[in-house]
Length: 321
Image (tube, rainbow, N blue to C red; front, top):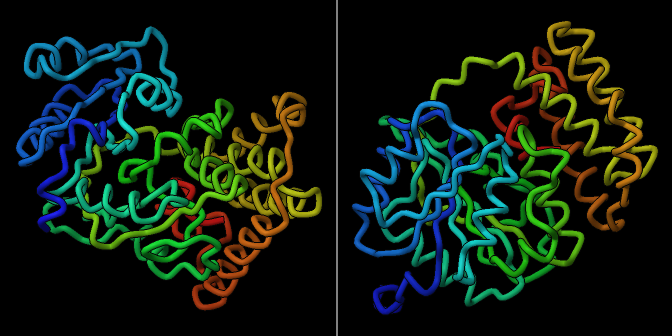
């Protein structure tokens, strides 16, 4: 587009990436981003890597700003990157994902045209086969009502490795929540934004690529996901909904004993969680219930899948209630 070609991305958007112990993978991501025709600042937050990730980036990409943390902060590292950024828009990647040609100009155009949109979730194509991420298929068919003007369906979740954010909105809600910093961290951010009247949308014409890095500690990831879903319920949902959601996770822990540690963890810090409790507005709660109802309808079609397992890829990223 002619309008896209006139954009000076260096003044409009910053790419923020978090990484940990993936020097080889982040090197490819940065190479892919630098191969794009547009030029833009990149900030990498190194979450206390032990494999020389920060050193590797500085040696091969001296123009990239690297912030090396002494402690792994998980998703909170993204908050640090956003704070360092000087542009009005942020493009989030992970150390195994990147944006395709025209994705950033298109996202910027959408933000400018729709001033109440805070989040644009892109279409993510996975591996060399470029299969659509199942989470994107869910987002594209979102049943939620549009409460502000937006170019695509309204959503209440997204994939953290493939999303654009309006920096002012992101900072308004404090960015990613410090209690839910890995596994499902996107969901509470989405709810915080919606609670402030911001819109979140899915855009199929904003395309990114994801080559998932092998994650070896999957049991631990599921434990944290279970814990975080309980914490989210008690941080933001009405009591009745929080009890219902917690009971679903208890049943899940009974079916999956190796996940039970997540249930124990959720109880251990529950007093702290309750001190930070703030119930969402009624319309946001209704949206969450709508997504839960959608999930239950899907279960009737596929009874072999439990509530806690419904689209595991989506649940672990917080894209469904």
